[in-house]
Length: 221
Image (cartoon, rainbow, N blue to C red):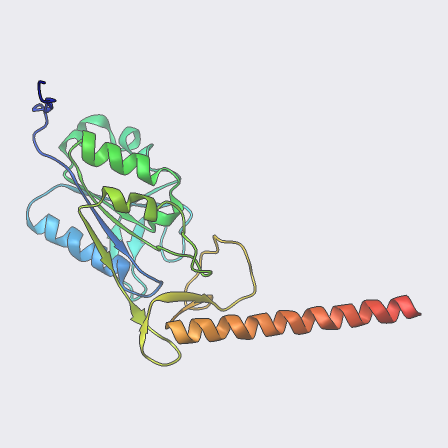
């Protein structure tokens, strides 16, 4: 029996790469992304930085770290529109694409596949791997199987100083996408995350009990 053959596409000048940086808020994901981008620039490679147009916290047309480092970027509602907006000829010459706050892009998986596999680009992605409930956030975890490397960063727990793996929301707002900074979120360790959930559950139960008592009182009247 003849062995199966694989036809290689030799038309590409080089193969692409995908590198993923994840972690909770305040872990330095954007800082790490900018360092990698700076390294690519030092190597004389052409770079473009992208972020979601939803993120307007510090600047509209720049990626900005929590401590003020800044890099110009394209703010987009989706990633697949980038090639047309950047220009096809300019895109062909592009070597590296950085993506910040990647959890906000629904087309992240499709874009990374096309950019790395078909177009030979190096794609460096930074984003949250989980939301404030420790559930998968957006499509960031979907691209892990595509990645050449995955870096999981940690922060410092705001309550005890130990390594923080999770993001705790300080407000009682429940929507998954709530863009904010230290006024809304803080990084916490596993112990303080678990404790906060127990406390929140107790508060909710107490509030429900008060509501039930009021309803019973009204019914009795």
